[in-house]
Length: 413
Image (cartoon, rainbow, N blue to C red; front, side, top):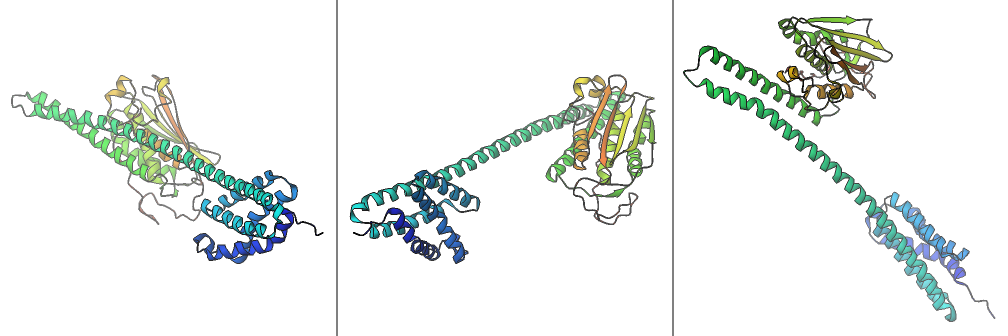
């Protein structure tokens, strides 16, 4: 009596034919995913779905099939195989295997063989559905994270808009109110002169705010745009000092420059760093006492250059030290409140220093003065083009017109 072939034997004997039929069907399907695959790749894909069933039958363990098909499906997902492609390959495999087993099984074993095959195929479908759910959950998780980031950004923008509206409204209200009073013909001359000065000062504040906001907006749109070229720090400092000299003389404040050692040329955006130094010097003069001093020191610290701006002014409260670089922060110090400012200057200074790969910080004692310090890498921020052209701060340049710095007044805190 002839030995009855087992399901495993039927399957092993049918493998070459089924694999060939699957590869042919995939090639003829017209699906874009298979169009660019050669015959060897199609055969490999067919085998990746047949082998898990083979291993499960050999070891009499259906769990092996779930494991292998899950592994193959995950690998396919990482390779970019869509879920519908996995399902299509599985359906083709089931169709061709079913035909072979139905044709070759003995009548008394046909039901059991087809039932076993059906269970395995259902496990495959469940595994692919699980892969789809994992992918879906990953996409949904990332979508939720993206939505949360967008909500946070929207909140920040609304917060900035509210603060900007308030900052614009304050000087504008004063300008309107005092301008109406100036239209009164019986207004005494000395009062008219005082009101005119208020309108002028508030107009300057409004102009300063608009300049700072435009500068801030431009740097939000181009986070990493720097005109990096070699420049001398002494020349950058001299340019920055020139912009605050008149105000310092008006308050009888002495500006002192100390270069404690010879400094190398630095790869930096010279105008942006001039803007940082100008900002710190402006604050040091603005919040200093008449007859005081402002000292700027430059020295090398390893691969960095350290710049310090010290003043003998009013100082900063301890609770404000961590807030001075925050956007729109305003100190409650009476002298600080008397000065015009937007609260954007130090935020921009921090932004420019960070773009250069440096750090900025402040040390201060109330009534004794403040020292703002920042570092810059001598060779510029990471991944800088080493072949960048030299830049002559006095006018000559070999590439790109660098942006002009804002010359508006800046706010310390």
